[in-house]
Length: 189
Image (cartoon, rainbow, N blue to C red):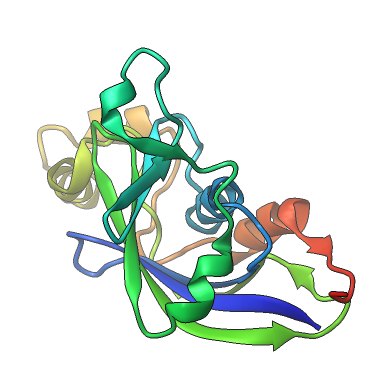
């Protein structure tokens, strides 16, 4: 058996709010959790990001700004989630658009030996396009693409480049991306 957590990740400031439930091994790093969130939401990993857990921030520290006090996400393990069942923490992606995600620790459990983790469990609603301009820009984007008489309708459709359905999360692609992250985990010793 291996220690794992079930997390519900909800994108703030949108109505309806896109959310995902994933399971992750507690042996993985916060950097690996970032990768799993990118896969769950089909983000493209173009931008900076960080986690806020309690009073600590984790991400990719800048060498030229030692006062930021950002801890390396690549070495911080998820083992601390063992004591956080029922609690939450924040993940911010793209400091320009400022996509804030609330991560709720739904459960901490022992996954079966050989479980392929991380894994996508469920979710609803599509993630906004990259660089759409944050929650306000996304709202304007949805207005424009849903109204053929909107002055920016054609421009927004051309900018995005394909059909956009805010209800469809494209589970098949999410599962494909998770398949590239998942590893069969041996029994813990």
